[in-house]
Image (cartoon, rainbow, N blue to C red; front, side):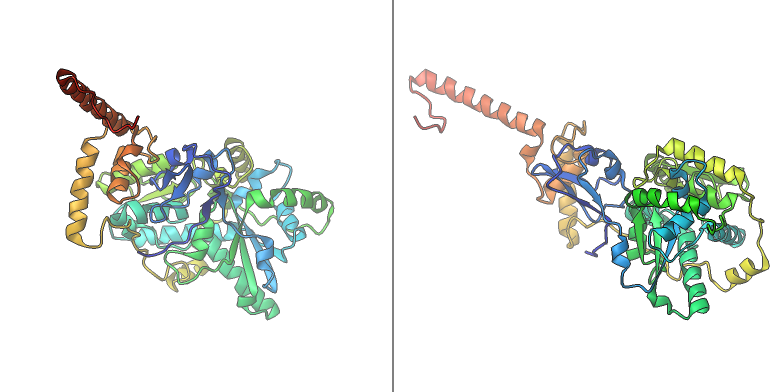
Length: 446
């Protein structure tokens, strides 16, 4: 089975087996075994829902650190627009870009220009696309993995356009190489991320041989250092220009892309339960009248990522207010954007493939037999999905049982039935032996 990189791990020392992570996992990728959480690696999509739910700090995001970048000659920070919404309105994007340089980066680059360019490229692609509708946005790594894991028939409907963060990293490296002569291999591009899934897209990027980004540092990890640097940034007169646009900031929350597609032909959806409902409908062919569906794993878009600091609703309001205070980029499809699009500068180089679950067995006949056994076991379970067995649903428990990963008695209802059957058998034995005047033996030595 193919191995997949994950940006989340469970800390056994902190986990108390409370099952909160298991209950919120959208792909049933968590089990509670021997009192602790265990990840099923072929199902995890690194959405970070387990991070939100865990009150013990037992779910650890595996993002990068500034120390990891010591091997690079030049380090460029590329902040998610969600970063700006973590601070009070009087803190401008320019202050934050400048503070990132105080924190140790050699440069900090706004994502807005790349957001606007990718939006234009998306609209060009939609104009020319003649395949199956609707196309599904591919900018949220967790949504892409969700489709790879649970909706393999829909991978061909993923938009094959590179993300703004990849475009920004590529352009920043090329520009620095031209300006200074530093080889791009010596330039480290770092995404300041609101979620762990961005780290996955760097290490194992679908549609690319290799990401242009070299690491991702979480907003949560950088926040205190950045807040301290902002005090210096506010005092400096050579503060970096904002370089932000209204549409660039709007990428941080739901409903920003693509702005030129008629509302009746596009749809925006956020939060994994809602995304799953929409993907179910797309899979059943119910939404073919739509040309484009924008999907965010996080409930309010990137401003509500699991590695952010601010209340997601406050952050969204700040992002909307900031976007409204900025000029909107010129819509167009400038000649430069059109030329770059024709040259393939915005397109993924590889087809995104499905990411299948581990099969019940590599031998087809044994796999069929296991499937029948799973269905038989499932039919005998109560179907209330209580989770007490350590699996999120009765169906998942039946599969784990067939796989040999658990025991039937792990289900409290099965155990209760087994005890009832034992008591009934003992009652029969007592009746039989009471008639003979003999004391029955029930296997307990006196």
